[in-house]
Length: 301
Image 1 (cartoon, rainbow, N blue to C red):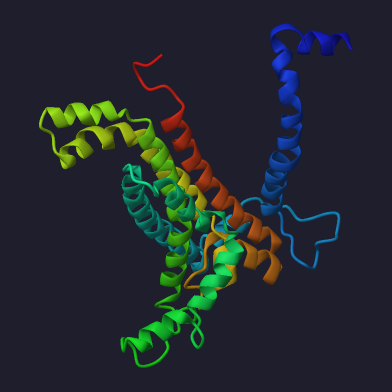
Image 2 (cartoon, one colour):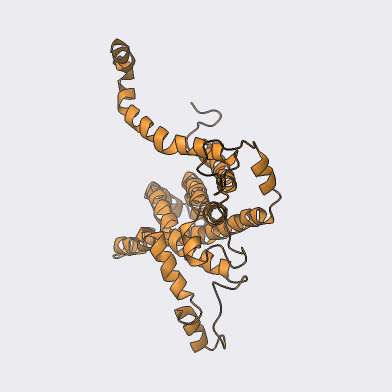
């Protein structure tokens, strides 16, 4: 009791309030990560899942997966999907943020309306886009045929050449509000007096944008891009509902491949190894985000 009072007393009283959160994080975040790392270094399948002693194989699972062509394809698909989604989400979100930054009557209600795609559960959005891209009853095919742009329905979700396009389209629709609202928040931190002074000095819209808006929005842009990368790279529910990783692994992501190995093929250790590869990539990107956002740069105190 005396030790607890000495530890949590005085300047350390703040630790008492943090302690419950630390226990929660240790139980529901740290321990699952450690368990998954241990699982990835064992040979666990459906045949020996209930046995108390599992064979320890070290990094053999990782070495075998590195020679698995599906893993390489999953990494490429995930990167391709993430980069293209980020480009279109950021450009459209930035344009909408600049538009809604202007002072007009319906700016705030319109901004709230545009937040709906972000607020709808991803599973619901995936089912909606699955119907939109449906071969026989999808409204997209019906519109294309009505406009005589195609003479027969397009197999959007079952064709290797178009399935990824459908996924990217759905995710762009989801991610635009996220980019728009964060950039809009960043724009509100820029004093309007700067634009008025630049206008007095003869600077046009383009020069004000390149000399004032972009430099002052740089921290916000960094946060939007890095957080967008993290959220997009770990996609699972959208892909699982719309394509399930098919056809022929053309939309297989690291997350869906980990799920397939674990719960379809019952290769639990291999699935855990793929999940850890995904975790390491996102951890590296998260460290970049922390360094860029919170750590002081050289010459700053």
